[in-house]
Image 1 (cartoon, rainbow, N blue to C red):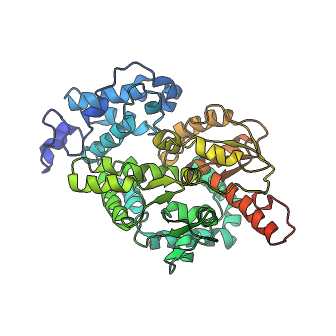
Image 2: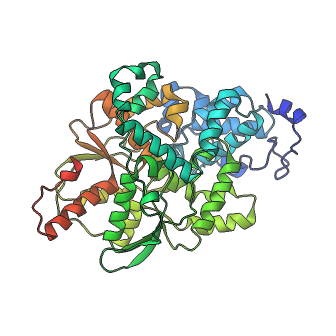
Image 3: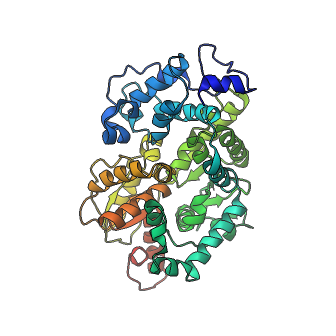
Length: 462
């Protein structure tokens, strides 16, 4: 259904916040974000989809032109508009490359909100989207139940039977690849610390921080959450896990469901209102939390609250670097490279801090990865919704992984799953780890040595 057809069938009033815009709903793309784009082309070589297709509509400047054209009434919101907008990975590399800092990612997310109101999902896609985005991710107890089912699948022998019988061959290939690299499901910190108000610092306390436990993060990567708590407390931080925190809303915003994104944002703003600092270990979540003010650009009351909240958000690597973390004494004798998660490097500008952590771990032989800040193709659930493009982008990414590295370190769970698939498929890169895990493993060895235990350093990461 085109935007003009939608106007004839909807009871929703046309957007009144900008009379020059032909978008029908509030929260439409902000012309201030495209005003400085001069279509110079500096963004082209940074765009994964343009590099794969060579097509202008799949470039940043092409998408900006399309978004502007709808606002000017030269184009309708239809399939031709929707495809380039949703093919974008929202990786933000174009904004890094842009001399004028045009916020293409913000425009894309606002445009997707308009698309989903003009052209809502139908049929199976609608059912699946509603099940995950509205019925599962915002509800911690339901997520924990889902995690329990995954754990049963892994521990009961069912997973082994499914793999040995070849049953995975009936699944789409990209889903079968994901199943093959599914991490072991362990106890979540949601359950472990359910009745704990404050996790005390080890030794003297120098600060108190709140921590976002995440949704998928705490189901599939609870060990990373545990490592984050260990590292924070080892460095003198009391850690709180506000009970009413929820999903950050990043996947909802990426999918064009800005209404649910705002609902979750309000819940998190209220949940963390008493915190001075909120530490996040997932790049995509951290970027979404920092950008809450953009969700409320037409709501002065909540925008002000969101701006106060966004100033509290800190990636774990940056927080440790800024507050002076304890440098470990124990060695991790591994050759390691680092992948810049898009929403950490481009979205938050965090590049040096995680690399410094790696350099500060004794025994690490660090090899810089060429084009380390190019997208891996994960992009939230892009590798599920756009598997062919995601696979092509992953292949390009894996070509840049240095040969013979034993570990690839990074700061985002989606990237970890995607690159783990690349390691399995292309046979290079070794173990995929979160940077904070490496620091935690080194600290654990330091503690063992201090207690007189004679253990081999680096045992945790083999």
